[in-house]
Structures are given as C-alpha cells and as structure tokens.
Length: 458
Image 1 (cartoon, rainbow, N blue to C red):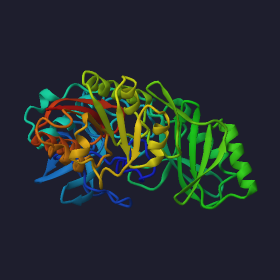
Image 2: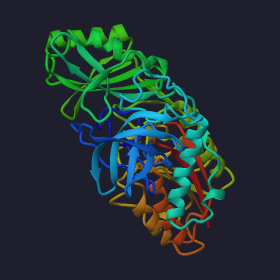
Image 3: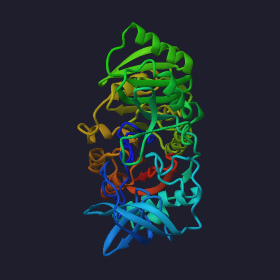
Image 4: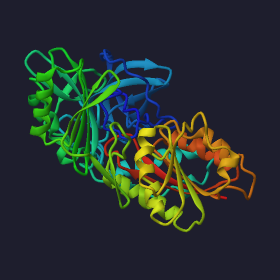
C-alpha cells in the first residue's frame, strides 16, 4: 500500500502496499516538499473531515484543507499550496477547540509523516473511518449504505508488526526514523507508539549499531517484520560488503537478536545472516516467511479479518477460490474447515510456501492481466478476494459476466481502499450480486486508512 503523501514511498507504517483512500470531497491537493506558508493567516470554521484526515473549511468560494483540525473548530491557518482541488494550508493555531480533541501520545505528532489523527479520540476515528466507506458506496449508488456498513472494529495501538524506516548516514552518526511530514528529512525516533515493542525501540538502537557499518553519505530503507521467531530485517546498502562489512552486519544481527538479516543492493536482496528462520502462523499452520513477502500489518488485524471471512464462508459448501491470496491468510484457515481451496497470487514467492503445506492448491498468476474467466470460475461456490489498493476491477467484471445460477454464489471481498472497493461493488451488483454487509476493521491506527470485509450473494 502506498503510504500517506507525507511519507516517502518506502517509509511505511501502512501495511498493504495500497495507496491512500480517496473519498468524495476529501481528496487533498499535493504539497510540494519545499513549500513554505505564504499569505495572510485566516480564521476558518471546520465543517468536516476529508478522506485524508484533514479538516475541511470553505473561504472565498474555495475548499480549504487544514491538517490536524477537527469538525466544529475555529482555527487559524496559512496557505501552503493551491490546486484545482483546493487550498492546502498549515495549521497556525486553534481559536475554538473541539470537545472531541485529545492530547496526542507521540511527541513527534504533526511533524512525523506517519500519523494524522492522534488529536482525535478513538471513538470519533472509528466513526469517521466508517463514514469513508458509507460515502464511497453512496457515491456508487448504494443508497442503503448506512444500513449495510456496521460499526468499526477498532484494534489497539502498539500492534503493528511491520514497518519501513528510513536512514541517512551523516558524518558522525546514523539517523533512523520516519520522514517528516511533506519532507525528505528523517525524524530520529526513540520509540513509536504504533509499533509492537520489539520494533518500537529499533530506530534508536540501529542509529548506534549501524554507524560502523554504513559508509558516510549512504541512505536507504530498513524494512522490519516482527515474526513469531524474531525480527526479520532487510537493509538497503550501496554496495556488496567486504569481509569486514559482513562481520559488522553479523555483529548487528547478534546485538539485536535478529532472526534474519538481509541486505538489498538496488532491487536485489541477499540473505546475510540467518540466526533463526522467520516464521508466521496462519490458522494452525506455521510458515517460513519469504524475504519481502506480504503480511497483514498486525496479528490482531489478521485475526479480525480471518474471523469475518471464515464467518462468511463457514455456512457455504463446495470449492473456494482465494484470489490475491498472499501467503494464505485466508486460504489456510478455510482449508482447515475441510474445504477444497485453490489460491492465486501474482508472486511465486507468496504462493510457494502455501503450496508446500499440501492443504491448498496454490498458483502464481497475474490476476490483473489474467483474471479467472467464466469457465474457470464455474467450479467454485465461493470466491474470496483480497486485492491491493488498485482493487479487482478486471476480476469483478468476469464474475459479473457469469450467467445467473452458475459459478460462485458468494463473494467475500477484503479491501483497504473504500474508493476502489465501492467501484468493484458496483460492478458485482450490476452483475446480479447483492451486497449484504460491510464490516470496517481499523488496524491502521491514527492513519487515514481503513480495512473492510464485504459479503455478496446471488
């Protein structure tokens, strides 16, 4: 999932490689990294929140986006940039705060590009995220969206098990952290309240340990996953390390008690230190974690999504197809119900471990270019879809082409993008599928992202 605009694409807390949600009326204009506030400071009344978490006001006939402002507040803001979508601003002060405002838990909030809603109480965040889905569905003609979308399942902070830090080797030290909002500058972190404890403290420790290993002037990403057997780390480095460099990296792995340390030179990963095989549990199955494989960003979120998908599949019979299956987040628990499951994903690195379990038939296939066509869909009674942020338009079009009474009679869709989900839901509905329910799952705490599970039948 692509990260919020204030991140570099690599400095991610958002966990699915899927870009920011865009709801009707909430698209925020881009902010050039070098932009500085200009013009008079305006007093603005905030009407509502946009899909990016900004407060939205109106002045002189223009839509104005104010970060870190809440509905009902009167704030002072100064223009940062203008576009056809409206005016992007910098918050300068709060004249009349909302009773729903709360103190942020992180001292870097408003500077760090990771979180956008720490100033909002969690109950309001859940309501807002549900509204993003409702509005997206209404925009696609689902007038009963309020009745279809249930309350948000809110998951705890401090549960994110994967992240991508940025680093820069300066003359005397290494800075490790996340990018400053709308900037390429890295904010050094002592801890991050979004991450599980084993990852939260890593930036500060890495700053000291990497200084002897990295050449001055180098910069890149540090990708970390908290697996069941320890932290799996991949480090960008500028060149193949010599013997001393390899020994230094081995020392880093030992001091951090990493399960595995991989280096990446350009786009090529090379395992450097394997102290323990990183392992992830899906259902009742333990799988070796491939380097760079997709994983739900939190164990709690994974469990919540699995529970919803299994509840939708459990009362069906017949074969199941799991499309965009990843490592088998849903395929393996469904197979444990005694169902025949065929799983498809673009990357063989994802499907290979799944296939070796012997419980699921797994295939590598580009479902964007080669979606399952009518004859391939007919043997399945149920389809599970978990596409990236771009959605599954081509696959939904094939499902909609199925003659009535043939092929899958139930479709369970997992999505992290209300806009593309509602588009795909419209395709399925026009093809004879009825949208029965939508359940939001907020595992992207304090961000503008929301996951959902939807059930269609015909």
